[in-house]
Image (cartoon, rainbow, N blue to C red; front, side, top):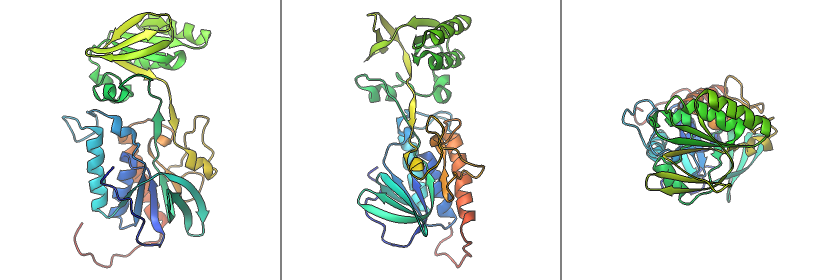
Length: 316
């Protein structure tokens, strides 16, 4: 994030739109708003889920694939090239203001006429040594929809609460005939998971995971019962936390998991407050997030007064 400014805004006037979060969703919204000639500030804490992606091969336009951080660098460059201002920081408080919203992040404050929340979700990672390196090497994977195709017959294991892990395992059965599910939880849920696993020819380990250890050829899994197993790839199914705290602050009625509900224009129940990407309900994919970003940015632009063109120094 060293290419993002940490200096305060030079202009005290309200920005047309503040975007909280600098992942693919937030940066795409900034790109659109910049091209709409709207003043736009992106405040990013540097915690985009996209940064975990070792190589995405299902993002359109990159046939050989692209690393998540490389994609973010390109998006930052593109958004800032159209006038969006990018600052590193964590938004701590949003309050209603006569001009829209008052925002505090670190030692700084600003007023924004509209806000787009692109704060995403935070995956619960396994407690294991060098987990970040294991993710970058593809030994630990977090999204079967994104990269299930990459499994390609590998020996893969899914672990977590039975009712969630088994669904993940069944999905991965599309890509390999060597799938194991490691389940624990309520007895009824475990029994149902075992029956489903048998139907799909999925191996079952009925125990909790004690520890995971990366090795040269994959991941070694130790159960609480003392059994050791080796897998090429591990998919931890440990859940994720919606980063919806700011929406809750403003009284948005989030769902039981913390997901932010929005209307057809991606606006929340609070007028002028929009939400896009993984923090909303629905499929957690970059392509979905950037589509929502285009919709929300256009809705924000149309909700503000028109700005007739008065000439430009260069053709963008």
